[in-house]
Image 1 (tube, one colour):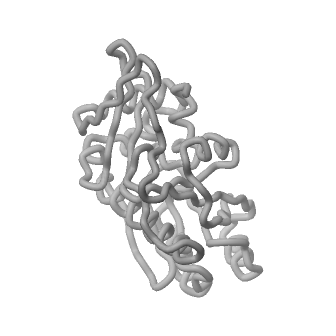
Image 2 (image 1 turned 60 degrees about the vertical axis):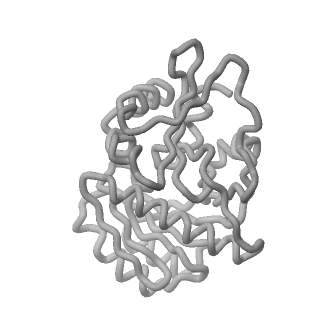
Length: 241
């Protein structure tokens, strides 16, 4: 697997991390697994936000307001966590977003309802696209074998600069857009599992697992996700500017 492909799986959705070798989920199939996956996504995101220089985390009954103050819109916004989350509650959260001065999104589970679309458009979020929420279930390993000649090694926050350098070189994203997301504080989170892939003593790829075994799949990376053993349990509709 090419270095660019490994990194692209996470960075394409604005998370700045790739979830590889993360502990897998054990939950009932069907909607029970979808509910557990969304709750696990929220928990993992809250872990990540807690390590950033500043953030806002407000949880409601069925949705959450999450602000990372990062430049990626999908790292800020109002996110439906429960199935059929209350649009009225999301509207209350959305009314707060302008004061933070960051690009943001409005996200719901499943297809957008007319009420969701109306709320999104009232805030100038007129474009909608979808992402699949996939899980790696218990006792599933995303990589059965290490590629020939490569060594996979778990590291810690001391490798923050290496993570940043490899990410920038592999994806072409500006360093400042992912610096906070790949900081030593993030890599040292109790829920984090940072890895490097080395060939001939050189780091050629990095991976950061956040507890939960989840992946938000960009359509362009669906084949890669399937290869890693992830399968879809839910879909998100994301409204953005």
